[in-house]
Length: 124
Image 1: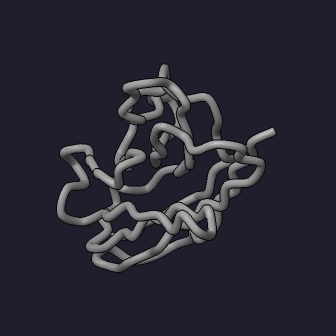
Image 2: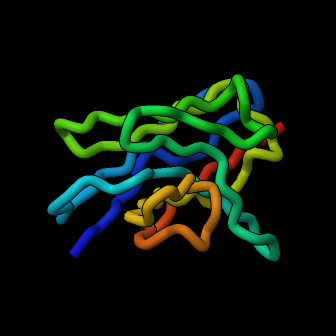
């Protein structure tokens, strides 16, 4: 059974930085992609960053240039470095994995496994 466990969330002032981590357990073969999503109350969960099996990365428009996704395949850890944070980045952040061929990991419909979420709060 695949399990994703996030850590690293917290509270920070606008302009600050945080690094989120996601440990992946129970993998018997590589996922097609992994990603980070975020959600605020009353809104749909949105994909903010993704990385595929070749290491290619992609980002949502609102976070380009500020968030960086990376992974350590040897340790099965996914990272999200968050710089120049804004109050609108406040959300619950979720790690996600997809085994769907051709998945981008930017759509919730492609995701097979979710982490439990970690809260990021950015104050102005």
